[in-house]
Length: 160
Length: 160
DNA sequence: GCTTGACCTTATAGTCACTATAACGCTTAT
DNA sequence: ATAAGCGTTATAGTGACTATAAGGTCAAGC
Image (cartoon, rainbow over all chains, first blue to last red; front, side, top):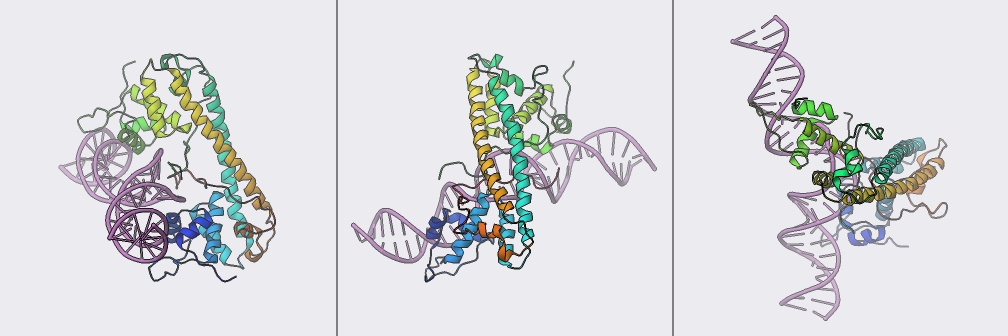
């Protein structure tokens, strides 16, 4: 079980990450500045892979990079109280819960919108446009309350 | 009912939008380039307010700015087929649905994570960290499948 | 007249978590 | 020797705004 060595591409493959993302984590201080070989290539080991997998798992669970940094710091401080970790998780859970209920409301509104216009007419008579235009009279609980929400994930336009 | 005039701040207040956002919509071509008074101030009318409200409602429903632009174009073309609008709504509904089920899965994972570590121990024995670190053996369906998801809405860090 | 404050203007940079692009060097196979 | 396929750096773009700076306009109050 000698320490396996990885170049950035191999680490990327082993962690289902892109090389640019790994370098990004390095710039952000989540990954260390690894040693280089004679050609200047980054050389990683199994500990780096573990750390990267930790990051990816956490990110996949929706933790922000900043929070992941905190979690990593905690994970490195073996005698920090476990409650600190749990606090992050619970807080995040709260956010997810909130987001979920927002999305449920949103979906209901979209369903209502979609249902209200099934014919093959023209825009002139489109009840969706009418609804978006703020029709007085009719289903009037459609009016939005506060902040809009992000429809698509950031920066992931084309397929991998 | 003479056409009321608005300056940008009044339009902002009437639409619960920030002035910078209105100018952003102008740059993006969602709002027209309004006439200016002698001091160079933008002067809007009720039609502008209606259009802005349309935009805000659509954004609140999670349509991207690009899609809102399309919807506005459609709304302006009175004899375009209504089905074009419905297509956008249905497509968006599909995305919302997908996101919803992703979030539900995520929540379940976080709940499991949160439940597994309720004691007052130290990180050394923290089951959450262990889980994020990729514990072999134990609940092993925790492994993420593909792409991470965005935890917070973009660019809304501090309160309004 | 002068100042204060609330409004308006523009331009530029920052947010988040990457992704894309360019322009280059190294290594190995053909 | 040349091409493919890695690696390197630096810079800019994504979405939908938000923040900041540096200034012009206008009405009210002193």
